[in-house]
Length: 159
Image 1 (cartoon, helix red, strand yellow):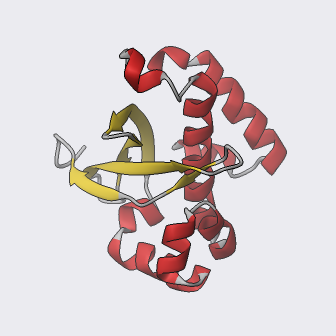
Image 2 (cartoon, rainbow, N blue to C red; image 1 turned 135 degrees about the vertical axis):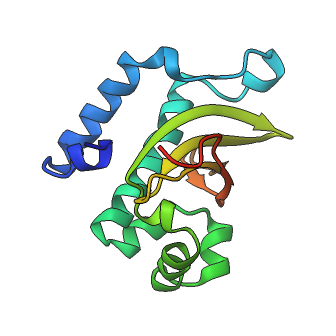
């Protein structure tokens, strides 16, 4: 049973609390860079917030909530697509493993030329593995939003 399936029966508040507790308990799996230059603007709370936003967007896709899924996208992404329906249609048709993963697992959070990128292993309904690379954008209010996603094939084509 995937993490998305497990959360389906709980209220949003309960899911958020459980998610935060799980992240705290599994903190050793949050691979933050050790370079002082890379960690100056990022702490554990930021890493957890980034994972939380991505998880919420994946849950919104699963629940069919286009407006909510769109709300986790950066202003640049929102401007590019113009409305939630167009955005979700693009994800559904071009990124089916992101729209409805069978399961997902967070990997490294890395700094690439000053941009924090969260890597995620995504498994599609056929068992094929992809790595999602999510560039994140911190807003002026400190909130993190998703500034895109690109996929690469995972090491194992099928599990």
